[in-house]
Image 1: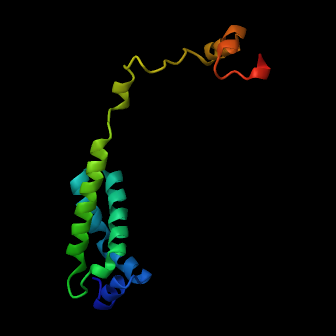
Image 2: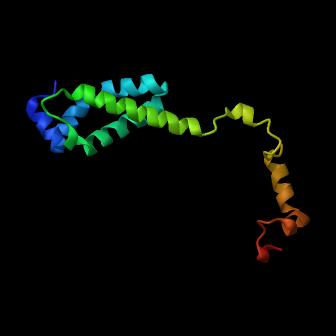
Image 3: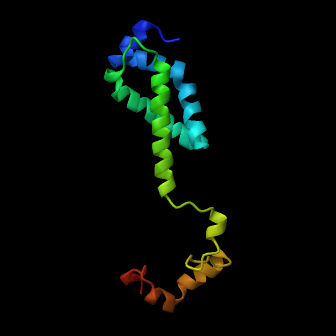
Length: 134
């Protein structure tokens, strides 16, 4: 449990008090974020963001109240923000993407790729060809 002196130190931005708060409430903040997001990586990101936001907003914390509910609220709001950000990104499993004809297909072998590159006609028409290599 974080003691009253640590709460005042947390409010004042004392690094030791912030570390003590993280040790005490880090798992709880992660659990809140994971419950909202359902993804470990995103929950870790949200946990980090929640503690940074708490640290930046520490002056608004009332040290006569409990730190846990305040951190849980921040964690929930940050996790919702992360969820909204991720929802705006188009997600599609890579296995489904490979059927897209707009994607470039790879040659069957490295030799075939080299032969295509090495042919004089391919080199002269290649956008990547060096002018001195022609």
